[in-house]
Length: 172
Image (cartoon, rainbow, N blue to C red):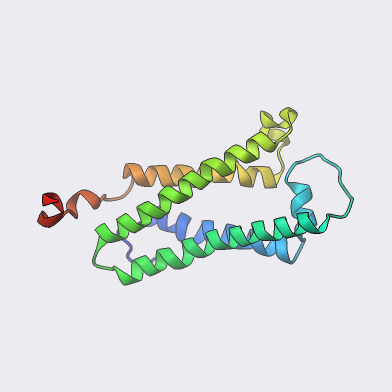
């Protein structure tokens, strides 16, 4: 792995590789195969719905696929651009990654919350009955959020923000 002081080791693996692959793959699954209807049916396990989706629902699921693609592109392209454009400035890397992680952490929390609230009450507290889609939307997002929170806490990495303040910034 290339040197990336603000996003080392496991963080780099998780946020430059695993998260982008999982989100881009989800977009492709929605758009091509098995498709929007499959994705829509899998959102809540155990609900038998074989009726064709109406055009509005298909459009909404395709647009959700676009959101998944956007998340994957931000993680893979923007984070790499930060690494490549600022190789000798870990404080700037950290500031940009931190701002991105804050936005993504807020999205993680709301994504899990709306998924959890949207589940039928009989499924909410029964993870053994959740399918891979629900685990992806809750369990996997917990893993991503935990990684972001660990990053903010400085676990397993050097924090550069406190060293980056120049005399000029301190005076203002």
